[in-house]
Length: 167
Image (cartoon, rainbow, N blue to C red; front, side, top):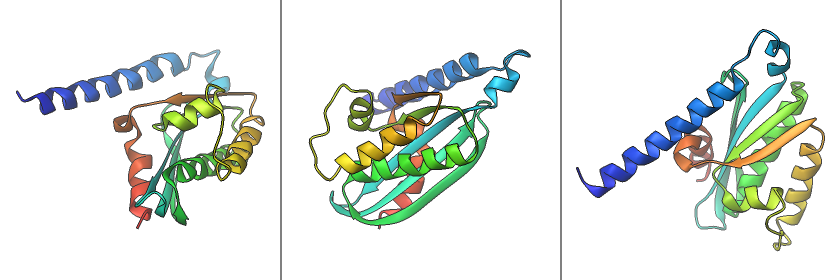
């Protein structure tokens, strides 16, 4: 077995472990069933060919049982990859709020965005500042929220939607 195959297998196992962890922690019991219907998972991604260049954004929204309830992707014009990441998340947060979700876990493969939203990094880019502020404002409308970094392999649907529109 080649090193590349071992690395790919390891990434797939890590992704499967993350999904299993989600299923275990979010499995509704009878008393939690009502509450679990109020929780959502948002997978979001952005893509830019040229950075900045033609960009696309994509997001997938799932309910607590892991059922896909919304998917969206679109071309956003010329933008950086980081801006596209924020735009995808903003769209997903808006949709989750419109659907009445009270709690959300954002899953992104952008470490920068995750660390900025969790207060570990400051937003230095003037062009990202308004997107960051809008994101924080939308997150603040949820009773509970988290932003979690996931491996790119665990964000395939959103990645595909974003990449399809970055042309």
